[in-house]
Each structure stands twice: as structure tokens, then as C-alpha cells.
Amino acid sequence: MPGMFIDVKVDLAAARDAGVAKKLAEVCPVNIFAQNEDGTLRIVEENLDECVLCDLCIAAAPEGTVKVVKLYES
Ligand code: SF4
Image 1 (tube, protein in one colour):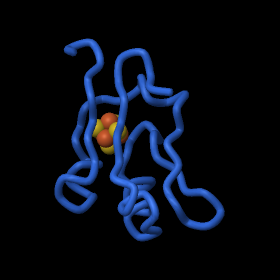
Image 2 (image 1 turned 60 degrees about the vertical axis):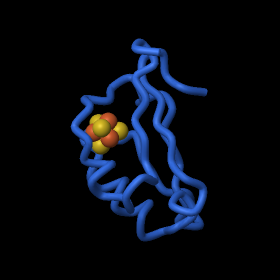
Image 3 (image 1 turned 90 degrees about the vertical axis):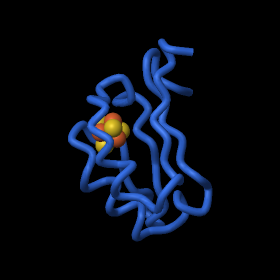
């Protein structure tokens, strides 16, 4: 489920990459990304609407694999 204002979409291959997941968990200032026990990425849905649109996640992941969607603009 997306947040009310923000959804974050991550390519499946990137979400399964423990290295990418770790970076995302590190860079997001409002903890929208976390890692499952197997290292794969978990989106912390209850934090989605805290997104400050800093784009650090987009910069940290391989190009084009993370998208931050503003639901209020669609
Ligand atoms: S844009 Fe910033 S606050 Fe929003 S999900 Fe990415 S890293 Fe987190």
C-alpha cells in the first residue's frame, strides 16, 4: 500500500540486492527503507508520507531503479 501522498517504487532486481538495500536503508533520513533478515529491501509503509523528497535514495541506487511518486500530483 502506498502512503497517502507518496509512494516509492523500487525495481525488483534492486530490491533483491542486499548491497542496494543497505545503502537505501542508510541514506533515507526518515527510514522509509529497511532490510529484511535475508538482506532484501523492505519498504516501511507507515513512514512513506514522511518523505522529504531529498532524492538521496535515487542517488544511492543504480540509475532508474528507484522512483519517488508524488500521488498528489497525479
Ligand atoms: S526522497 Fe529522501 S526521504 Fe524520500 S524516500 Fe528517498 S531518501 Fe527517503
